[in-house]
Length: 228
Length: 201
Image (tube, rainbow over all chains, first blue to last red; front, side, top):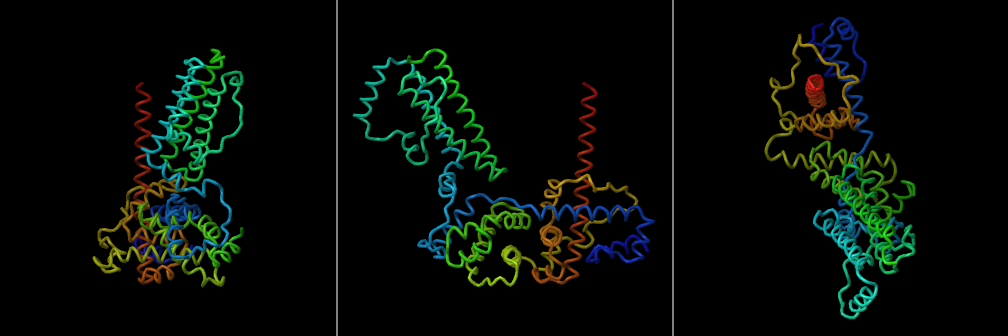
């Protein structure tokens, strides 16, 4: 048997068993032995590939669900199985997949942090009168309060070193930290679900940086006495 | 919720059950679509189409076959239908599954020392090489070696002969072998360069 005949047999075989003449040829031909071994290696690795999946982006389900509802395939009167919060609000995350919006959100957080720093240098009475003035004149809720109402649940975790400080500033720092914490949690969830989502990773990294800055501000205030 | 429960509830229109089924199978269906078409946007559309068809037909599922088998066959059909629509207008199927002329197909160079792939390639390299295959080779390779379909099933799905399926698979493996060997050579070259640079420092 020559190499070309062996290759034709290899092409036609349906299982792992080669006929005797082909096996005899393998014993004497190094090139065909290498070819056969490589084919097995490729086949084995391809099988491994087949066993593992790739997660589609969340928007596929969002769009599919919309279509199922539009076609009336999903009965809205049937009680849906409870889902975790992040799944019941996939549209929220979709919004954050747009870099500009995510950037704007982080900008709000940054602005809030800057405002906290600024307020720490203003006398307490001025802060109070400014807050009173804002309450009287502001008919439009601030961006972070809207965001808070929409997606956040404010917890009661205490921040070391902040208990002794001015309540308004402490609350402000705490609120900003909670905004960032919630954002981090959502980013982490998204990264876990879609490890290949580079954008989610970048947002997560940005959120970590924001948290570090806020904590540094809090620590700094704690050490310097803040508004004591 | 087990898969059987999810199927029963989905047949009654339960939204949570639909989502459960989607979450259970979407990774494999999306991977299949992505490997077959090599394009994320198309793969997303095809995944959505496959599940849409599945949910439209779920009321007819009686459990005679495994649900996953039913779903994956349906997904393959959706992908192939799409690819057929794309190529039929331009070329006959036999040509579309055999895009390279016999004479220009992968050939083994007798006498050239072979690099053994066993233990040297990883899944990332293979995945990348699969995407470089011509569409006809890629489809048969994915169906046979990755998804585990038999040649007679592929012939039925792709409306071609069993011989054609075998021939496409063989050419696909030969081409993959070439691509992977090129990768190995590149890696070896990079290592040598790195060693040289490191040595000269």
